[in-house]
Length: 64
Image (cartoon, rainbow, N blue to C red; front, side, top):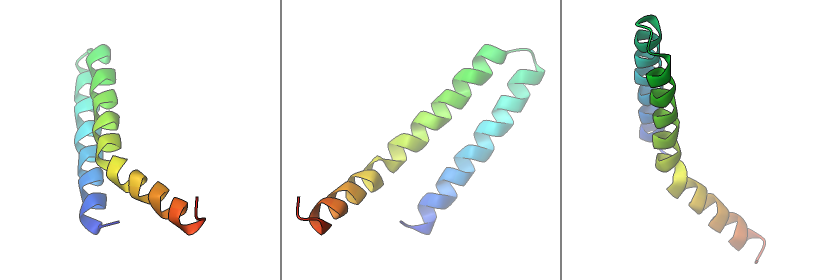
């Protein structure tokens, strides 16, 4: 896994947490929840290739 990927995930986490705080303080809890959910989905989409590589490595390791 690359260090750039870790920094991107951390940046998304910081941005989402700031947006969540701003939206909750302004009384928009529903939009804050949707923003958090969108951040989680974006991070999962970024991790999909890494998870796929992990499964293929495990598969080749155990000759499955």
